[in-house]
Length: 200
Image (tube, rainbow, N blue to C red; front, side):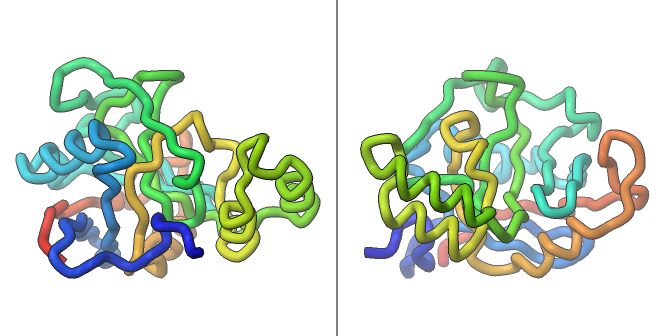
């Protein structure tokens, strides 16, 4: 059984379309698993909150992060004004392509999010996951997906996974390889020109 997170979107499903100055990224959204994170993201997108906002932190073989209107990594807020709590599920993880909430510690979600770009997990880590097994949080499908896709397993249960890129990972990869300056900020701005919520 393939993980639901990695399946393509169904017809009629609402998806996110992130149009950047480097290309378009499309992601599924998991409202059943992370209802608050998805509501927050969708509402911000529909209100134009993310339009013109940058990916302010870009780290090759790790992730690209955006969603802060200030572009500093210190700003942004949720649609409720403050921050909101984390939402975790054993079968929804920080695989390559995961759309996850950035935070400043437990239950501090605002408007910032990242897309996991890392495309491998070291063999000895996979072996440890196999040994730990489902009892310790590593169902077989999760381990196999990490082995196949890669990802940032150490962020699981620390960052809410609320979506998964199904088209445009080459754009994420392209952004991840751009030249950056201090604080991993791209030297030339990477801009989300528009974030749309559309029916697939």
